[in-house]
Length: 389
Image (cartoon, rainbow, N blue to C red; front, top):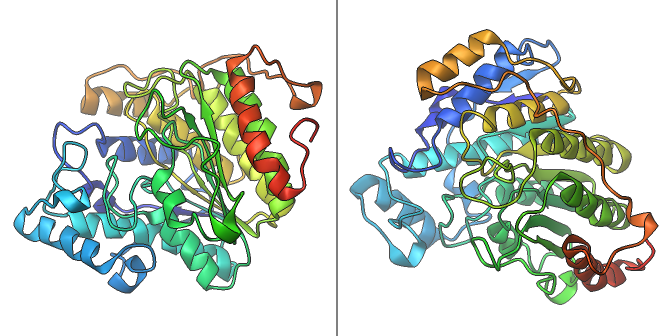
């Protein structure tokens, strides 16, 4: 498997006060290293360069790329392009840092398609709010969309993009909303209570791509059992029906109960389980071909490093056993860099369990109602029965 990493990825920082603090990446890589993942001879580390304009142009407009360059070179905001906002302040390295993240995900594609790796992960990636001509939600260039586009351009017949962030994957969906070869599935907190205010079940794709944009809008407060029930009530059925050749997934861990910006209530244990479920789907339907990215996550010391180290371990084919302690060396690094005490376990020590959808649904349950709205909207497009499949 392949892991994307280079210290230059830490240059992606909008401002010192910004919640997307690159220390979360540094602590993740340090934890991966202390857990021995990066020392595995089966793991190769990819150091990305800066993506060329021709690669950025596959998913972004020329005027937008020029606006990003100007923002970095001259500090020039562009309201029309979402640059210079509170969410996306401009910074000197805004173009090169953003394009380096894109190149990391493109390198993952190249590794998978060449056979150098069956799976690859870029935890710096997952910039899913970036649209064709606009930055949004801390995201400038959409690396996941660029990865999906390269897969298509290299002859992959169908790609599944699976977004597990607490926020709707609106940018990626908008780029492929009329592309029938791409299915985008986003499980997120409802837009009624969380940015970006989009991603409802009826937003299901256009033209020949009707039924390929899948949105599961979950109520605030959804915890492990409800979230995993929603995942298993929608994702496996659609993956089997769509028959993708490669899965590209986004694993924003801002769904965690300790995240300061969202209102879902997941544990690291559930996020680990989701990664294992995606791995299983890739093995079952895609010959193992899977590209994973990071995304949101703003509990930068206590949650993000553990969640993404768990993800990296799953991608590497060596899941970390529940109950494993975090290394003392790493805990000291967290104290030194963040001034807080790090968790002593790699998981949250919860008991995971969820009701199978095969046992029917409960109309009185808010999660079941949300899942059923999606199943009724999407399943008939793929020959599935929303009540029984």
